[in-house]
Image: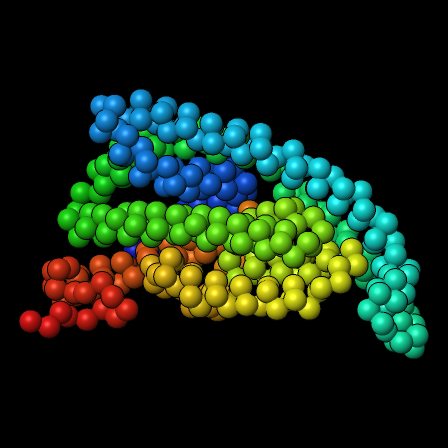
Length: 363
């Protein structure tokens, strides 16, 4: 009698292969992040490419036309907005070290307190608190600087991602056909086809919805902060729009950043600014976002928070950006697998509804 039968050996072999695949994904995560962003960029460009393709009678020519238009728009933006944005960012960068020094020493409490009419006792309490926690404040500032440096190190993605996206735009249909050709059994082929179709719909909707929300936030933040005479309004508005891409925690970080910079720069109408940030968040989360995003993602808030935290631990800032679509993709695979398992037990796939629960359709 064999010590290990054939079934046990197959299970062990499958487990080993699965573990090696996970290890490969972990060690190659930074490269995979670039490819994932390329896929997202391709989904963003796909509708325009498909429309132009019918006019120019060629997918390669359509991709070239869309990329040319994209480059013209980016160049126009940087020509008109870039210099002003760069000057504001430079001035903010020069002012931050002096402001951080005043915060660590507690002297900022005196200047802000005198401007807002704080009593001498209150000013002294705030000054003492800041001075006693100067080490923690310095550590937070250093951590924020490291995060910014981490993002700056990945600027090369801005060039690599559009280049990689060209291949996905040109050969995406072939990739799907090749993947399906590797599966010969009909049930497994239906399962894989369903996963591919659902992923295509989810990712296309998610990328376009996120871009719309980010662009809207950038416009509202920049214009409103400019009208309210907030210091460095364009830089803060741009940061708020970019933060909109980060699920769950991004908008909160943007609000804290905007309010914090305004207070440190002795902005006098900070109460009105706080009211604006609160009202805009309510409008964005409960009015605009549900209409634009819809229910395609269908993720529980706890799952979204877990994805954000896990993505940050695995791949840093880029992992946070990718956390929600990855979690939604895993959910799609799981739900399709449940349908596949039910089909094997009870009957054809088309007898089951792909909804919140897997149940036979009522005739």
